[in-house]
Each structure stands twice: as C-alpha cells, then as structure tokens.
Image (cartoon, rainbow, N blue to C red; front, side, top):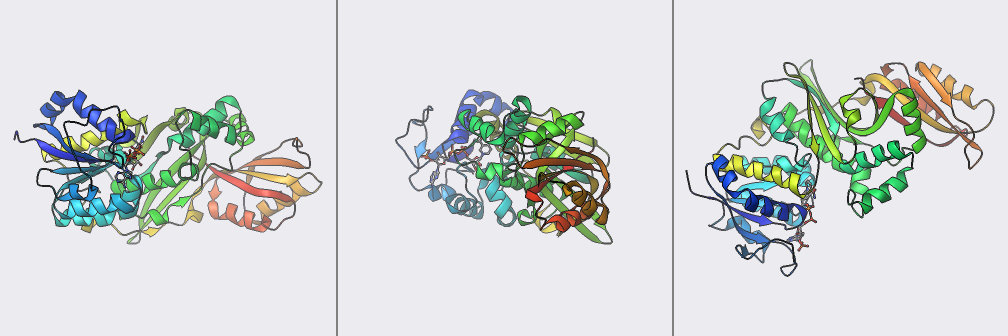
Length: 435
Ligand SMILES: NC(=O)c1ccc[n+]([C@@H]2O[C@H](COP(=O)([O-])OP(=O)(O)OC[C@H]3O[C@@H](n4cnc5c(N)ncnc54)[C@H](OP(=O)(O)O)[C@@H]3O)[C@@H](O)[C@H]2O)c1
C-alpha cells in the first residue's frame, strides 16, 4: 500500500511542533517502517500568526478546528491541545464518529472519556490511539497492550509524574524543602506555572487509570483512584526515610484481585517509601518508570522521559505508524464491550508496613498517647524515632515504621488520635513498598 496516511494536527504547542519536526526529520524512515508515507495535510491552533519555529507553509491552515474532523483529505486527526472536555473532546467525538482515525496525547480526556470514545471508535471501526497520554516517550501502552498480552497482570505501578519526581528527588539530593524545589522545577521548565494537577497527584491518577484499564482489561474508572499528592512531604521525612534505608517517591499503584466471581480494582496515587535497592528508587529527576507484574513475564520495568517535545512526539508518531500499517487494535487491549466491570478495592485490606510521621506538642505523655492508640488499634511498631525540638519551638516530630499488618489498623489508630490536642498537624502516612 503506497497511498499516504494523511493527518491533520490540532494544537501546535510543545507536542504539536515536536510531531512536525519528527515527521520532517525522519520522513523516509517513517515511510519505510509504516509501509507508506505519513503526510501532514492540515494544521490548526489558536493563534495563526505565532512563530512556532517550524515551517507551516506546506500545510493548509484550518480556522475552525472542528472542520478537521470531516475533511475528505484527512485519514487521522491528531489532538494535541489538552483539557478533559471542551474543544478536544468535541473534536474526538466528531473525528471518530466520522470514521476517521484519532490520536491524542491527552491523558485527562482519555481518563475521563476514554470508554465513550472507544465505543464511538468501535461503532465506526476507526482507529483510536493514545500512547503519548501515558509516560511521554515510554512505549508502555504498547508494552502492556501487546507485550504482556499473554499474561495475567496482578499489579501495575510506577512513577508517573515527572514534576513530582523531580521535586522529591531534588529534596533528597539537596536537603531543601518542598517549596524551594517546586520553585526550582518551575524555573527549569519541569513544572507548570500552576502545578496543582501535578503536585496533588491528579496527573499521575489520570495515567494510572489508563494503565490499569489496558493492563487488566477493566473498564477505566478514574473516579475510583484514591489520590494524595506530595505537598505534605517534608525535608525531614526524606532525611528520616534515608536514615531507615528508603527514598520517597510519588507512586501510582493499581492492583487487581479476582475472587469469588468478583473483581476488585484498587487504584492509588500517594507518596511511598521505596528501599534503596528497589528499581524505582534509582529513578530521579523528571523521569517516569512503570513496573508491570505478569504471571509468566515476571516483573517488567519500562523507564524513560515522561514528557518533552521529542519523547512525546516519538510516542504520537509510533501510533501513526501503527495506523498506517493497519495494526491499531482495541484501544484498551480488548474490545470495549468485553472490558471487565470491577468494584473499587478496599484499601483497608492492604497488608504492608507504613511510615507514619506525627507532629506533636513537646510535652510529657504525648509519646505514650500515640503508642497506646497504636496498641489499641493492633498496630505493631517496628521502630520509633523522636526528633528534637523544632526551630519554631513547641513542636517535635515523631516518626515510626510499623510491622507488616492490615492498613485498616493504621487508619483505626489515626482515628483514635484524630481529636487529640497533642497533634499539632495532621499525620503523614506513607506505605513502604517491598522490593
Ligand atoms: N508537553 C509535554 O511534554 C506533554 C507530554 C505528554 C502529554 N502531553 C499532552 O499533550 C497535549 C498538548 O500539550 P502541550 O504541552 O503541547 O500543550 P501546549 O504547548 O500548551 O500547546 C497547546 C496547543 O493547543 C492550542 N490550543 C489551545 N486551545 C485551542 C483551541 N481552543 N483551539 C485551537 N487550538 C488550541 C494552542 O494554540 P496556540 O499555540 O495558538 O495558543 C497550542 O498550540 C496535552 O493534552 C498534554 O497533556 C504533553
């Protein structure tokens, strides 16, 4: 087949211009691998006059982005705008509804509307692909959809947000606090001017929900992801973790349990302690990494750049090559009608150890109160460290590591202490991942 695959690009920012540069740079190689040329036909963004550092003159400029969806000279629409709803979603519905291929890097939209879009795509037999929506340049969507297709996966977890990983690993390296490292991440372009989505874990939660659906063949359920960001992690927690042999990372974890005819899917994003020898402990800076545990493959590690124009463009164009080859397959690894409907798993059932940090008033009897709550809730303490009086005065930090046990016991202990006047700030609980 030598007919070109004709594409239209909506969004000419970081990723959109990266895709143009990649297609121009590797044109012949892409054609050889795709079996036919991949040609840009039309482009659009908000501001036609902006200099984007790429030559747009060979391509038709489309004023109304929605017109791209039904052009006769377009086979695939690329959506590189962003936003869960709004124009990106309208374009997706329209392009797929018209039977055109649709490729996106938009994790928010796929996490919220991926099922609906997969249904539209199935109804019109249109390819729908989103490799770039998870972990930038890492081919983890393809890895889970195809590479691990023969496995029952039980757990998928990873470092899914480069901003948080940069902040935490720089706090570890420099000893500086969260706000200082977040400002540095913004200066270096690793964090948005408004970093809320990243810091609160929402971006990682979008990606985790997508990975869980692909890896487990379950209906995507973003609303069930329990999410906690990194804003409460202090430099002293990281120092404490280091003393104990751990690093702190924001980790998204999805685990599937299928018992008594009911499947339960637990999806969580939260700061975790990882032993120094864990493969994710070595992942520093804005890098992303995903671990998938399969019954036959064993543990697999995918690692690489989670963002940036070039890595993300690499993932977008990989989807285009698949479509050009006629190899797109079901977006969530099985037909959307066959995806399993799971209940949300109970976090209280998780068995493991936790790091718990209390900030307490510096007075006699406080430690006894905390340890009594632990005893009453059946939490066994492995080690307990009380740090000296804080510079501000009046407060001390008590950190402990628990022996392995059900998470519901730790929650119960914290409930018992909830109204204690001895606690001057909410405690921070971070699970300890085994190696
Ligand atoms: N940046 C990354 O490293 C990265 C990595 C993975 C995934 N992604 C995803 O890729 C997508 C694009 O990200 P980006 O970083 O490239 O964003 P960006 O640099 O902000 O670019 C967004 C583009 O969309 C255009 N746009 C916005 N609203 C529009 C509208 N209503 N109509 C037409 N065009 C509109 C903008 O036009 P103007 O330029 O004219 O303002 C701009 O060209 C997002 O979904 C993001 O989550 C990004």
